[in-house]
Image (tube, rainbow, N blue to C red; front, side, top):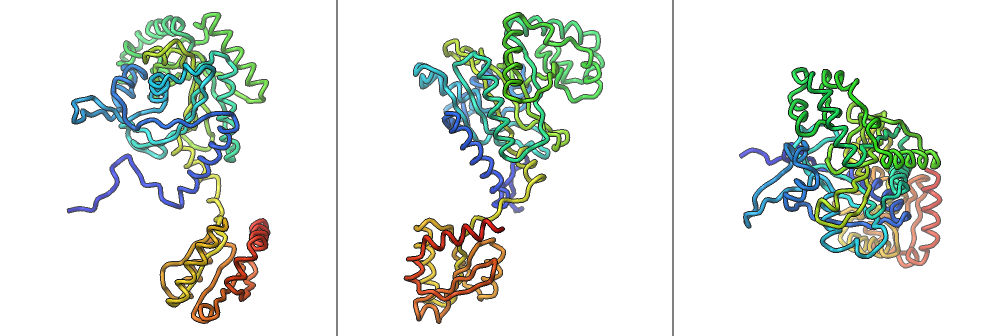
Length: 428
């Protein structure tokens, strides 16, 4: 029997990489809480009809990429391929819209799509997303874009640009859809097979094709911006003005169409110039009809999602791993010393310090090597002599200065230790 390995399209996130994920999550949580966004956590699997109705049966996600199965209750179940539909379902089911006002929500977690795995794109992938539900105000569009920009900039990303478009309302899209059918039909035989299929089912998606010949043909396709009604045009102009007022640069991209059917009006992507072909880090837009489509009241909404795998790849390319925040590494040898080391480590943790206790039982030399590698500020050393005398040696890693201290005295100098640790850490 062969070795059991992770399934194709899934991957383990090991501790050295997890520190980047934790940095992203902590940064986003801080910024979102300041803006009054509240976290929501929805199930990983839902009824299949939720995604068929919400995302659209003519989309690639529903038609080709969903993980769908029949459970033991003979129900069709799907692992969520994106987060918005589940959030809206929860909003309707629990009547959150009845509380009045605007719902500002955010989520993070794994999503699932059956795609060809590549760097930054897995079959189990992770997203961080926000939803502002209950506001048709262009300021909501500008706010979510501003928050996405703030999160990415606070993570240290610089080579970013914002692509902006409007896909109009239902009437605008209907008129534009017919214009695209009329334009692409004479070229049908030259389009790639997927685009030929989309010509009758979802012609807007042809604009997103990666096939080179199809992209050439699409260069001269009609622009959605020429088919916007006055209401859509006014909304889009206000969004652009608000972004300019916020100092957020953008470029219009009439070919930008998000891959899900529920989008209306504003559509946008934040793109990194450091990622190569898979450049989109954040994508989103307005989806005013989705709540109604899923059985709720007429409720406007706007949001976005950040693909965390791509973002983490970017951070790893551009940044060094976060510096260890370990205050003490405890080295011990001998039965009495090891027992005292455990007590001492736990007391220091309870006092608010970060402490790693070496549990290997190996020779001092090997424990010291691990202490050096850990990035700790200080090392505490207990051997037979220290155990007999109820003392501990305190060694500052930066200066190699070493002092013997009574264990009881160590616990009375907490404030001084904390100040010394901060001082050494600031000098790194």
